[in-house]
Length: 567
Image (cartoon, rainbow, N blue to C red):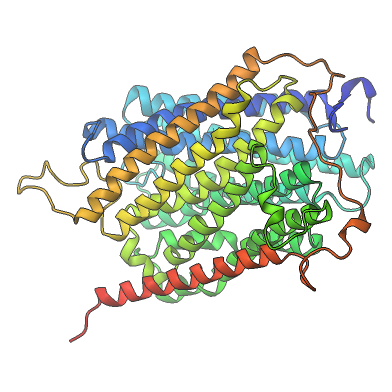
């Protein structure tokens, strides 16, 4: 049963924090920021090496940096933050005690130990520059695999703790009706995470045994098939988590409510049912899989996952528009958007995450996930360009946005450098948008990925001359990497500086500015919109999105047709 002494009530939001859960949320969030810093420094080295005029690192160091960059940011930073989100969305949002908090600290210690061991193998031993994918038969150091397995088991324990907390909340009736939509989104992420981590265990444990000499051979085709059930699906955890963050921030900043909870919940369920199928687009050039399997997975089934993201892309800005119009910003198509709090980094970061993920990540993901088109961009810089649009502009920017709200609410510290904080999402978002666009542009022009010397200047027979446009794309990408690194450094300085030097707030002391919006009354929603359309501005943006989607899709088909000239 609940013990009131084990809880504190946030004076700004009314949220009820279970103290053991609060400690775990803080620990996972802090660990996430540490690995974001490590991965960001390594990413700067990668970006400066891909910049032809700079070409910073030699071959060995480039692949070492590239491996560490991918694992620290795609796995450690994001999953640590997602564990914090799971505990917050269960214990805090449901006002209940967390399940097995001591086991939570064991899980956290396993994840930290695993991440440190993996980084030791990659960055110190220097014998594990195998990229995040770590394809066999290319071996990494033993600690590389041990670290990943330890980290995965710790994350899996956290997922079951999340489910256990939901059971406690239901048994102790700490909420009425269905769980909140944000918690439902976190539940979606948790379910996908369990599938993902199980897939990783299925292939990484035998690979460790192979590394130790107990297994003679790991089939490369089987490895790739099962690994991508782990590697790609881990990004679907991110999608579910950052969409849940979008809904949370819409409620926090505007008091917005979903246009239709049933539709939003159904879209989350589609993620569970079909999103993992999209991992097939990593295997479209593999000879061991049938064309029928490839075509089904990258067309009919994938469209359901795309539809789910499109639903969220309509309902999140639509709910904000409806709330803004209910508050009186009801003139024309976009007064509600023009008069949104663009100086609030929690809102600006979330909205740029939403647009960036939908346009940069969503459109290019469908193009890259189509079997026929995939072949022209599969081994080019288009691929990292795409996932910088999804994982960085989408997930990382959303998590950064939420962090600015969590520091005073959770850590009871005032943010330092508030003016820099208001600019940080724009600096980081603009930089990473450039990284995504220019990498995809270079990839479209044929520049290869995963190559230390993109221009092949060290080749015996001389270099390869790319077009001037391709070289310009690479230089602009380098400049964008520098800008994004400045934005990332600003985030680290603000968050870490606030935790260390920000003014401490007592448990019952208010921040001094509104931290959660009061929802507009039901009566305020009557008669909003233009004519009979309640959210006309959002619908216009959706139509623009669809027009860009169709145009870009058929441009790529035209490009494909030109590569297959017929006489």
